[in-house]
Length: 173
Image 1 (cartoon, rainbow, N blue to C red):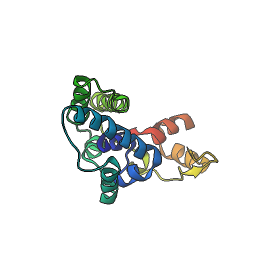
Image 2 (tube, rainbow, N blue to C red):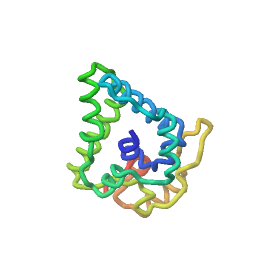
Image 3 (spheres, rainbow, N blue to C red):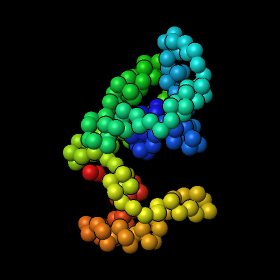
């Protein structure tokens, strides 16, 4: 679960585990995988929470799928997600979280192949500025000063909307 989540979010193991929503998603994906595996007779020595805690203790590690995505290498989707979905189908085990992440990672991989490019966040390729100004709901917002500076330094971006699309989502490099 950590590999595809990190490829989609550009987060390290530690960041995934410390962010409530991605921690919950990883746990759900693990529960779906475990349910299918248990139907095939597999037993697990460690709880899902213990596995997540172990991943968190690794620290700021970039998963292999994230590293591959950053440099434009094809992602190991079928080995890490497709096989689990096949196992879920064979055991008639619902796996909606895994299926959703699988669909998103497949599209990310297709985009990288089509664009012949890796994917990095704007800050990773040298943009500077405050993208973390928080509003009451905790969502990230683009700072007005950052927008002006980015627009001035990147002539291919024609508007704040372009900056949002490029910087907040991801940039193909």
